[in-house]
Length: 280
Length: 313
Image (tube, rainbow over all chains, first blue to last red; front, side, top):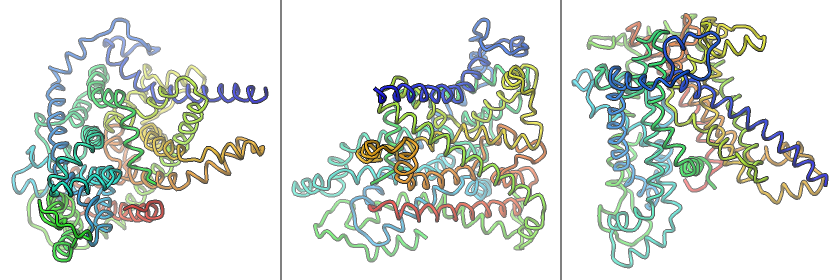
């Protein structure tokens, strides 16, 4: 009886926490969506209106084509896709070696790779800017993507190695008995059972690369090539109060792809993130 | 470092398993080369290069420079450097404390709600984690809109309605750093929540139930069982959040650009400003080396923690 009473109290308390949490995290997002659908007079309404009178969808059309946000989104998609592919190509074999082979300095090498993840990308971009400008690689997608790959490789290596570690070594051994060599084991035995891990890695790398700012901000100065993060800051610098609705619409477009992916595949991503973080 | 180590592996690396496996050879070297190349070219080389540049008087373009200690001397004798460090320290300290606390409260309440089979736990979890998937620059842009100080600004309107009065969120230097910190708490709580939530899943259910049967109150269970068992995860979380917050650049760039004045110019932003706005590469590189030093210290702490926490490395 008292147990039941206590539960009701707990439930009410929990719902208070849930409401506050939802308000704190959702309000800024709802506000930017609301701004993005307002007309100029509504932007300056006092008191501010929570909901726009009529939904000014045309703001989105304006930023997509006139403010060239579509081009920025496309650039991001292009860079992110190649980054994901490149990262997987270089980290899959390495994580296989780290998971399945025994060699000296393995532990130190792994820690060294993890150490790279702690370094602010700003630190490495400073000399790369100088270096790239000397060899004429500023504003080059190749150079840019190489840096993106380097930035996401440490995480990917650790994540994939962790995933491969969970796959029983008996699978390899059976394949060895069947006469497979290492490449065949990786291709025919391990990659198929690692698909969930590869997809998680792919999503996490894609979301992080989509958010990447400091690398393209410094290595690119041609507006045509800006990914969405830099495009938005660029748009912000030319925005004043009277075009806030455009900046808001562009921001919504900039977060939509990753947020939608996150919501749809939330379970997948959360378990991937926790698997990477808490082991044993 | 990996260069030297890789070579050593090439010579001495032999698989303990004696089964011969052809297909890219016996040792790990061919498997590691692509990764090693990228990391050496794009991480290791630039890291050494930025250290080298910090001992020069180089400009961002042009190749004439000489070696000097002037950048470090100027940096350490500049009062603004210490003010910047203080701003960064305040920003990092309060960000991490509140990210951890808020993240813990949310994780705990979602976990409890799931055990009671309450509705809405998935919703709350999603909402709290969403900011993880939002680019930092956009978070800065969104919060700049929230902090709008004009009559149509939403937060100020709400504060006025409840009788607090208007606040100069981004124009008052002292308040600005608080505003930036709040936006960063909004941003980084997701990271804490994910880790602590995972940590809570590992707390032994039997121990909790036994304690409850023995008459331990909810508070006692929290202090005596839950917190001690997630402490290792919490420490890792605090370390990681500290590293990410120290490295923050994108969000502050779009939220305040370091202003008003230089009141929200955190470490990474300061390095950028020196190099690309003051056009003083040596000085900016010195700041970057300082940042690198902080990264290295934090990384060592992190390594120390996961060594205690993990076996299978």
